[in-house]
Length: 337
Ligand code: NCD
Image (cartoon, rainbow, N blue to C red; front, side):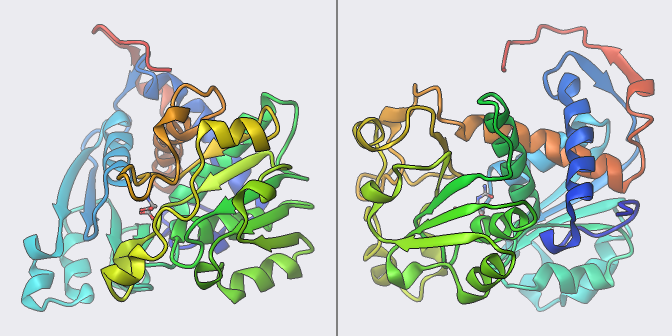
């Protein structure tokens, strides 16, 4: 795949070779993300960051990734703070903002909105999440995390046993991850959700067509016994027709340390795209697991910076220049990793 100048809108753009290329570059970004080295390779470049839906880690880690490569970030958050609230089209907004930026990352609640925006943009656009549809950078960082976690156990992604738990209907992180996993061999999917929030049929069809097996269940405890990875999600309540409808599904599947100890294999890795819903009536991933060494949720968020740096370096064609612009840091750096 040629990354230079391309939009990143869907994980369907990638094959295994492209994913491997991203992961190799992500590995090279570690000294920068860990604050051992500084590079200014994107000095003068501007990222237009447009998050029209709530976001903490995707928005900030895209921004940090760009800053860590030496570039600057111009940010718009919320529809009401932009001229979209005055009726401006994606076309006009994209034409305007692409005149101010070298690359744009965008999140919006409407499926397909980022594609529409990209068509009018004169610079590459990265999809930071479009409604229930896709979240490509999240899926890449999740897969990168899965690969790293499994490597510590002498396993690789082929033959993975993964249980996806919670709101599989509206969760775009799950949708993109399922698509990426179909590229590997012999993946065992266990889909644990209320029937009303099951993974949409098109994804199930694609998984089966690629030769993987799927078990669907709504019994958490019995279905997590033989998994390498548990991938939990919160109820995407903002996507439901009403709050009362969303509330029906809150707290139905909860993982805590007692359940983990009783039902999981000892090294089962726990993942979640975050945010986890820590309100008392939800708690799909209890904070009594915070000291469990197999809890990978904050390794996922750290890996997000590496993956997003890699995407920028590949799209803006600077992968072989990053180290040339490097120097050691000259401030106190706390041990983060
Ligand atoms: C996810 C998202 O926005 O789709 N969060 C994220 O980007 N890490 C998942 C979620 O909001 O539940």
